[in-house]
Amino acid sequence: MLKKALLSLHFVFGFEAIAQKDYSGLVKSLYSGTESTALSIYNTSPESPDGKYICFVKYPAIAEGGHLAPPVRAEVMLKSRRTGDHVKIRDVTCNNHNGANAFWINDSLVAFQVSHFKDFEIYNVNSGKSVFGIVAGELGHKSFGNVVFYSKCNARLLIPDKSRTPYKPMDEGIYAFDCLAGRSTLIIKQAQIVAAFKRQNKKVSDYETKILHLEPNPLNSKIMFDYRYRADSASGWHDLHGIVSSDGSEPRWIKVRPMHVVWYDNQHMMGVDTEDPENRIFQYDLFGKRGELLGGTSTHVGMSPDKKWYIGEGDFYKSEADGFTRVYLYKQGESRPYALLAQWKNAKVTWEWVAHVNPSFSSDGKRAYFIRAFDHEDKFESVTIQLPEFD
Image 1: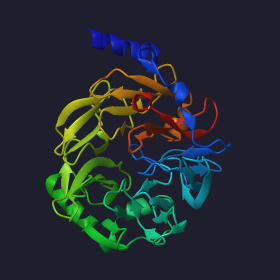
Image 2 (image 1 turned 90 degrees about the vertical axis):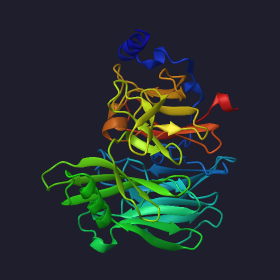
Image 3 (image 1 turned 45 degrees about the vertical axis):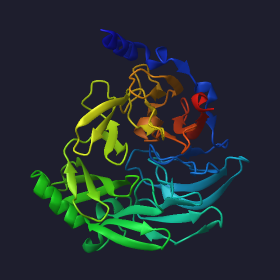
Image 4 (image 1 turned 120 degrees about the vertical axis):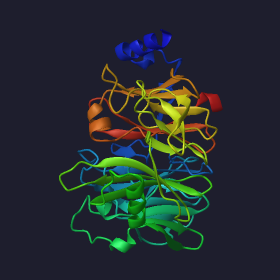
């Protein structure tokens, strides 16, 4: 009865009525200019591992549209946490969704997309220079052991611009870039993944396939990825989830796919259960079996390094019933929000124009980052909060 009562309060008043604390006054903007700013994908920290720098994207003009909005010119920015100074390090093209997909490789190297879905660069913050030049491919998310995983996939490459030169079919696949050796290696061809998925799932068609959202586990022993396929040009896309060993062996379809899945540890994943009435955050094994409850209602999730805290939105892919999008901090294992971090009324920018919240934590777990929109204005910004629990 208590659970039903709390859920009823959510629908009528929003969770802000039952969050234990209000930390919204502690949130600070990363940039004070008039332009919109964005972070990378959820659960990917914009802060360097040593805590010295923050990488974000600045838009002279944002993309007016959703996931498939044409990319616009943007600027990859580097901010010093000590001085607050910021500098532009690269002009890029991207839309609002996940910005330039930047992530830190180590304390000095940061990777980001240059041309939307097409190529990327690795930048050294100490030398102020590109390390390996432009590399063809679409970045995955996160890096461990100085290795960057990326993909080459024509169904992704040609989304923004059909005139781009496609990859040779034999070159489509998942790659690893060794940042110490400066060498790229093909791990597994896309055709091999397609063949494996067709054997494991008779519904899978090989008409057209997308491989995206590569994410290694901390040991670099396995890579998760999104697998999308359609049967013909008039059909919709079907979303599946996959995993492959980092040596290219054992590509496998995971039968149960939580939404916005990421690694929980080396042997488990986590994500939002779309079958759960409250769309809460759960842990899963690598076959899709649901495990323990991690946090409450969410869409995009950020997890603290010690796995004791989670950040997410108060509803699933939409504003709450009163029109507000709210960002909450959850304590591990609890559905009720521990603290309100932010709220705003702008469903167009956050949900239709996909400037998603994309929360994450710093590597020491003391700070959180996310994106919030402005009320009644076509603008969004990257923000941070020093969490009182970790001072």
